[in-house]
Image 1 (tube, rainbow, N blue to C red):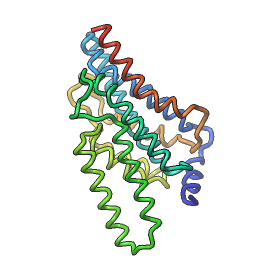
Image 2 (image 1 turned 120 degrees about the vertical axis):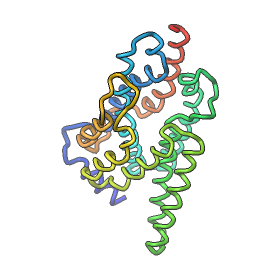
Image 3 (image 1 turned 180 degrees about the horizontal axis):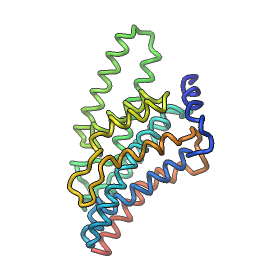
Image 4 (image 1 turned 90 degrees about the vertical axis):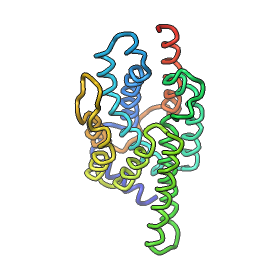
Length: 249
């Protein structure tokens, strides 16, 4: 906990800037735009250029969600409950996710992003538990690597959103959490796979890295908001998108 307090103090160096609430509002807004296009709704309605733009804006949220998830597990007073909330909303969100993107109640070939965040955060949770063990460093390192590989292949096997790439990104962000510069580098490497977006008329390279200045402006404070809003936003907005598809298409 002492190290987590030091980490928080580092991020509070710029007190007047963005709270975690600000980052989450930005991420949710950009995600909504992306999902309006990704679901096929805007493309099928003929708004091709605007849909392309929304897809590009949608590259920004995932680094923010990964970063805030690492902050959440690192600073949570009850880490087990934090994990339970992520897993619960992963389950709640799966049918809305499948309806919005595949028009089926169940699509076993793609699972929602809450599962990716849960697996990544669970990995971090286990890493921090291992650090408490009285073992030689080489054994701790071996266990950390084994846990990473297990979570990595779980994400691949269950085909979670962003699959193993999300696990790598969350791991890098966690390892860099005590430094703003290292956090920026972690996002540069962790999200290199999204640096360019092929197949869109409005292809703009590296737009995913617009998340970095937002994270660097984070001041370590929670801000004023109801945490359940952000959990509920994900399944609710997916249900609304599915209903819009039924009504408009």
